[in-house]
Image (cartoon, rainbow, N blue to C red; front, side):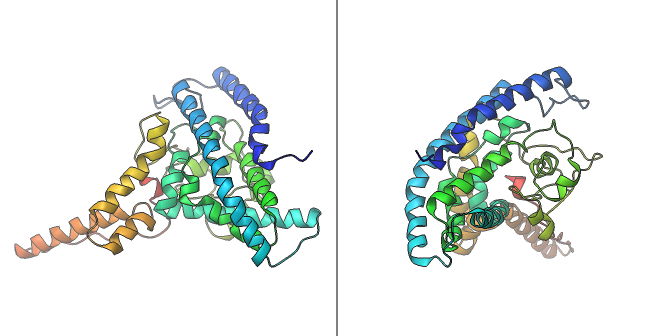
Length: 325
């Protein structure tokens, strides 16, 4: 009997739930409910947040099952007609698949912070102001609409079957469950090779030095190679969430709030170039566009009045801004 890889995450559910139960028990004994700055401890569990995460996970699983019905035939077509390599079964093929998919995951993840259409789905995962194992369940049912499945098409071109593609994607996501915790400190030399809880805490933080960093799935090497790695600093504790807080534990609001904001921005733009930018430029593009327009109007008004007004420079250095939604 062959195991259906699509059910991998559900098969691992007892392990995930056991980890959540242990972490909740451990934190209740070792961490105060309120942090030293009089805010709720971001590691501890809160029923509204945890239930929202669970609801989002169930919604995501349902959407994912439907998405595979579309994606798998696409992968199969590409595999039959456009594959460049035919692999012999074995460890070499699986290692090549693992490396290729993890690199593509890095590309997908980085794009999800720099392209608003993709961010509209991914923002769900970042919108909680807590970080614990249950945060890993916080996924969006809109990933298929955003196009996550498209990023795995090159794997079919590289000669991997649809079944192998689905399996390795789920293995990658299953691994990432274990990096969503504040109970594990830095792991020494492993920090140079693998995505770790410390590395991923940085990714979930909205601090200026952490935002839009550490996109790793399993391997940390891609962030180090492509300049997106930042180390967690004990003197700059991560502050979790998005720059404009969601302030809601409603799973529907968490899922659709950015899509609605994007639709409003698309509708109010004056031309098609700016409308497309509202969809596919970086997530903070509309805010920067509005700020420049306001600055230009202020400058023109000042010039008319016979005064000079300097327009502030737009800081485009780095990859900041995706958490502004």
